[in-house]
Length: 228
Image (cartoon, rainbow, N blue to C red; front, side, top):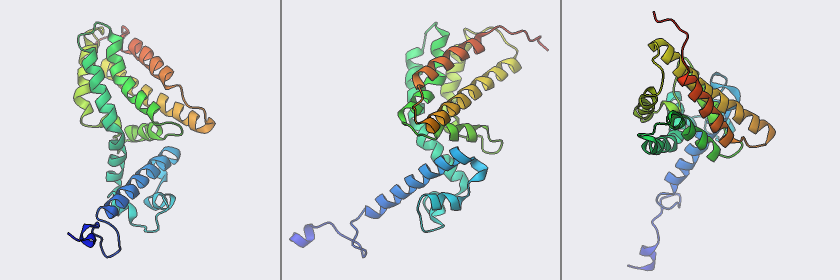
């Protein structure tokens, strides 16, 4: 092999193989981060694809469609970028809590993986505000905590907690679970918003502890509802 043969092959533009793919991946990641930030700050309905492309500094108006796809593809991609570490941490905590007689440990499995992921993002971050919006949007109803991989994990945590909870009418139990979900989503979103506004990072450890304590009380409290 000659010295010329040993050099990395290049295409007509002079780029080495794989360089185009690396640039495409970097552009896609930039578009996802930009979209998440704009959605978090302005709301899902207030941000157009054109605004995302412009804010990301892309000259081609079709960059979002080319690198990501449809609007639904964009929302799924942003959510997926956060769901993997949350799902992994939830599985680890569930494995450690199996057989525990402390109901708080089972509640923590549904709270701390998300809160600790937010802590890992630094300040400012946009995940909590984005997640609160997509998870409560009547059309979208998605987000990192709605990942298909989360469903069996949350079912296991709820089943373990049910062993310690009072017998509740199904509709009461459902309302409490939904209240707990919204408490986590919106408390974290407000903490993230305040941190971004002030430049002072949220105390996510305190947030996780407070949410776990509060939701343990909520989910285990006796009911005054009369069975129908």
